[in-house]
Amino acid sequence: MKKSSSKTLYYILRFIDNALELLVLPLLLYRLVKEHKLYRVYTTILEKVINDNNEFYEFLEKYDFKVAWFDRLYSEQTIPDEMLVLNEDELYDVVIKALLPIRPILAKSLLIDVISPYIKRIALNKYLIILEPVNFIALKNRYIKLVVSLSLYILAAMVIMHYVA
Figure (tube, rainbow, N blue to C red):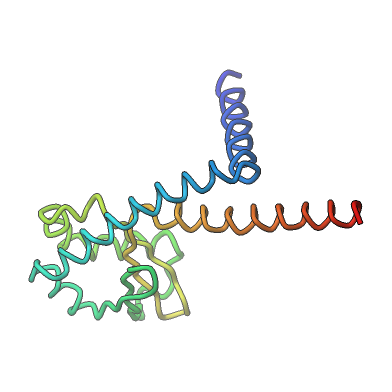
């Protein structure tokens, strides 16, 4: 019983936190700026390692990585015929094991704490490997909340103006 009540409390607190972020614009802006500064630190480290570390640069060239928006690195890879039957989780395990040789390079250059791999199947025989800063999803969610929050404020202003006029 304790486990479910603590889980319920967790979800209630998360809901309150999200509601506060949407309704209190300065809180959202503060968290957004903080998250963006951290993101810039991560991308600066990533750019420095790419420019200074030949091993990591060779790894990126070997797997044909390209730079996408927001300093994310991605590579489109073909799935071998014998692995076409794998589901998403099994494919993720196989790809992560294939990336293990780069782990010492990431650890040596401190990138292991800065980037996280994301693997997504895009076709039956193709998948994407995305290396993105670890707080990318949190930053993206903060921007989405900002848009929603501003939309709510505009909607509230329109309703008030309608009833005042």
